[in-house]
Image (cartoon, rainbow, N blue to C red; front, top):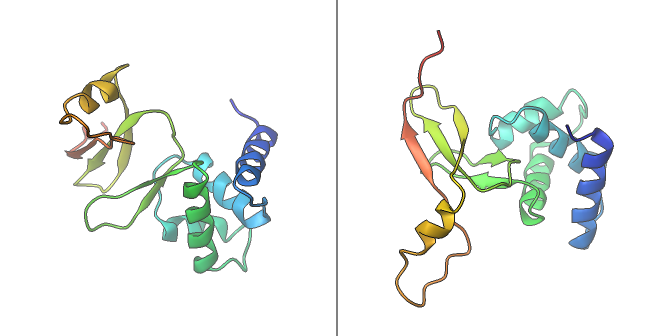
Length: 142
């Protein structure tokens, strides 16, 4: 398990590498995303951050999330017309979007699958990333 200190150091280093500094708001937003890895929207992150920073604005949350995405600390995940969701899992993986509950789940991919998918591109095409999204119904919990 990664300690809070290690997370703060990782955040500070990535921000510094991008010419930015760590702020209390960025630290709280990043912590919120790591605490519950359920792919929250900006509004959900805002609601979770308010107990720690009651005066935080939704605009600040959006700005912090954008910074975290730009610094490759989290991924922005989009499902057609739905709101952007945020995922701190940076390992290669797919997402399963439950169309019944709206929940999003990380799906581990077999080693090499991403490279195999990239190999079907026509000659000269280069993919910088591959996003695999499954949509459907997750099994109900008994």
